[in-house]
Image 1 (spheres, one colour):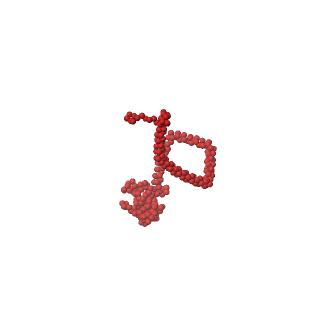
Image 2: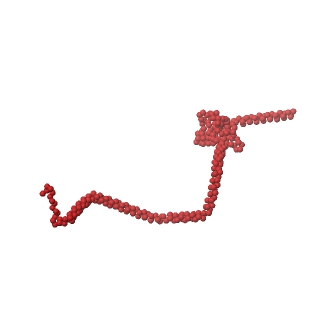
Image 3: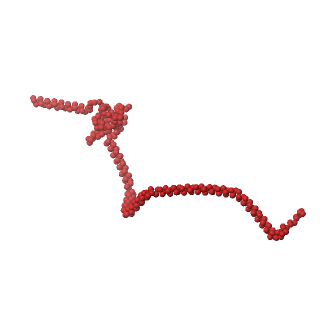
Length: 308
């Protein structure tokens, strides 16, 4: 009799415990939390495999809500629409952004909110949307994947170009360049003493230049005096040129007067002298032919016909 009572008590305890566990599981699974919550939308084009309808939503590491639903965007099937259930006191502002964050090495994801500065206004519902829309940025894993793909593509392109560059002809040309470089380095090593001497000469030239620069301040007064004398000489030459120009103008006027007045008179005088010389020549010829002309005068000319 006592054994039957014990079995009944154990069975009742097991049933009650099972019912309590079921109720507790239903309560925990219902996701009901105390406080006021608001719903928001977030759209993303990347994979949301790490999220679940009960994934946590955190703001700077503090849990402020849960992911209420995950579905395709009815307007654009290439995007995923997340419905976020967030506490009303969470600072969801116009500059708040959401990303998918990974929780350690478990592979589970969560929604991470950042931004929400004090100066930004609260996020409001936009026309055509049931709930306000939080801007979503690519996750860290997505950015790393994109960067890795770009790096791999760049590496592949670089390797292809390197294979094109390092063909047989270019390889032989590079070998020749390396051989010439080795020869040049050997020649430079052999000429190291001359190079050292050239460097020493350059140092001496630099020292001489420094000394010359030190002497320049002392030579400056002499240079200024020489420039002053040069200026005075140029001024004297300018005055002399002006005087020569004036003399030339006077000479030109004298020449113009001579050519216009004296030359015609000289020409007439020359003509008269020529005429007189001709007359003297004619008289000389007559005297030579008839010397009596000096005593008797010129012969009398016989009258012509009709003359008396």
